[in-house]
Amino acid sequence: MQIGAPPSQVVLFGATGDLARRKLFPALAALKARDKAANNFHVTAVARRELTTNTLRAAVQPFIGPDDDAGLEQLLSDCTFVQADVGDTATLVALREHLDSQAGGASANRLCYLALSPDLFLRAVSNLVDSGVLARCAHVQDPARRVLVEKPFGKSLQTARQLNEGLHELLEEEQLFRIDHYLGKETVQNLLGFRFHNAIFEPLWNRHHVELVEITVAETVGMESGRAAYYDGSGAVRDMLQNHMLQVLSLVAMEPPISLDAQAIRDQKVQVLRGLVAPDPAHAERGIVRARYTDGSVDGEAVPGYLHEQGVADNSTTETYVAVRAEIDTWRWSGVPFLLRHGKRLARRRTEIKVQFKTPPLQLFNHAPGVDEREYRAALRSGSLCQTRPNVLTLGIQPEETIRLGFGVKRPGADMIMAPAELDFDYREKFGESSAPAYERLLQDALNGDATLFLRADEIEASWAFADQVMADFTDPRVPLDEYTAGSWGPESADGLFYGCEGVWSRG
Image (tube, rainbow, N blue to C red):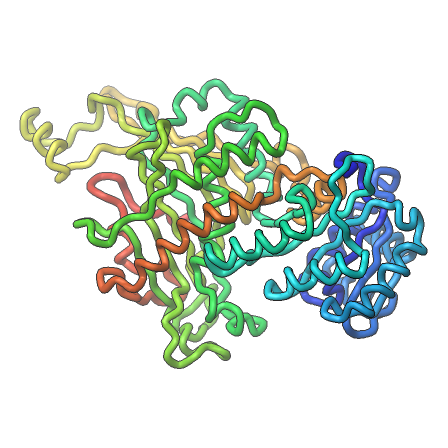
């Protein structure tokens, strides 16, 4: 397979779907607008119903960036349309004949993007291989035949493993690009550079100096656009924790790779995921919280509770919020809690990582007034009086892409009283423009055969092993289904995942 050469044919299945019009066609148009010479690819849009240039333009235009109109017109002028069904091999043979008649013919590199329902992935790939659209590429001289699939990849460890095994019977692992769009976000990618390029942070990035790591993915949306039909059978763990959040966690916690090669990076990520340990509900202190939202108000607008959303079963027990206190059994992180939180209908849309560093060994400043030294030390030991945590590193992923470092400074005056301060970095302010959308970056990488930001089979399975354990613990009576008001920051019970003086969840 010609890993380094971009394919000249992009075959987009599900071309009339919501993902295609909102994300994929705008990303392809942006690539055309950025660099025509570097993105000399032809798109074939495949759908079960008829699609034309005019209908596609009307569907995609509202989502095109202000600088990408020319890219869209260039994309449309070179786009062809084929009516086909991945379940009908005869229509796929006609698709293969169409592709063979395009520039480059059968010798062109080919990327098939399956923007389809997950339950069609294996059947689609099998029929695409049978019809000749795809083929196993075992030699570097073969034209590239790549397939890109969306999440969710399976519904459990067992189903993910079965899907991997089925795909491996048809294609090489190097041909499979499992996408997680969170990995295309600039701040997520910057984790590698931030950690391993800056000598002032990497020596502190371990159990000796880090007290805890908090990862939050907060959303204000609920079940708009008929999403309940999917979500009620999925829930917060399958929809967000198993994929997006664990991928971010693996980048935060991984060991330095020997190079920036895709395999070297993914080797280190999978070691983190294999070392991830879910909390035990039998433990005296709580480690898992699940909940669903009730009627409330978000951004000043009244919204229904989850059980009142259209499409949600009356007897549903699906969680819309999950918080987990996990640990990673590795030499670097043993004993450091990783607190993961995700919820729908929360107070703000916010995705961030907080690395909270340990306090100095002696509390020299900000003694409580009226407390003598012995009482002060006893209160610190018992936890009835908590030291401030002045050093917190916060990496904002969305909506703002930022980095903030907290530290303490002395207040003006005669007394030694410390006050909190911050150093701020904002991507847009620094570079004068917002970073490219995630799908644009990931599509470019897939075109180039760069799998660094895509998921490998063993990563998927290690993630599901952890998620399955969390969901299995949902059946334990010590993990009830709590409730929280829409527009709040989630159930009060989630604060119990912070022990002693560790703090509370970030409020953005």
